[in-house]
Image (cartoon, rainbow, N blue to C red; front, side, top):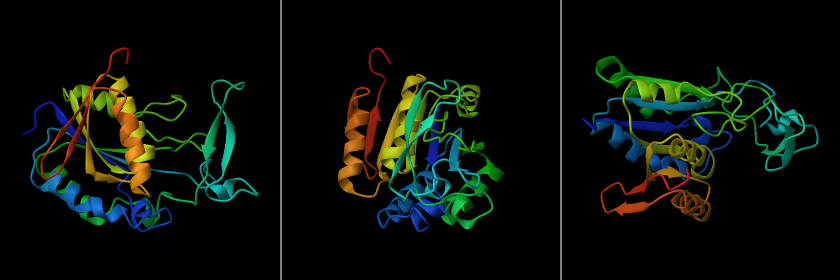
Length: 231
């Protein structure tokens, strides 16, 4: 049992693997995630899912004239004078669709663990039409927080092991918020992917800048991100 250590699975959903936002690189993480679920005991597991309503702000289809890959400025919900840049994508992870579901191999393992010995918390994020949520802890504007931090605190968690999709978006956002909230964050490099190795490595290098980094030579490489001063 990894005491005081939780496994956090970020958006391992069909749409990010072979669906509307799929990448040929994404399926490579699955054997590593399976190993983490099959060969380790965790006191707590969290699995996040994008859970977008129809017409979500991140959908290009919600912005006439825009195409996937474009961006739009959106107003902060709590501060009408403040804006942020929102990327727009193909429709994805809509509740009730195949694309929103967790990948079958991961889902089956979570259901087994949940029924047998391990608390599993499913974080359904980005449900507000008007604001996106890369982090499993909060939306991009910190307008609304999920239950993740509370659940980790209740279970006495000090370290989170982060895996999933994609490295430069929701994995990045969750890792940074985890560090801000005082957790030791360990990113499993070969259990996360992006659309290219260059983009993935750039995200990892950015995360290294948030704290001390230690690389361990194991079957699954570990990139340890510890809180830096001032975080």
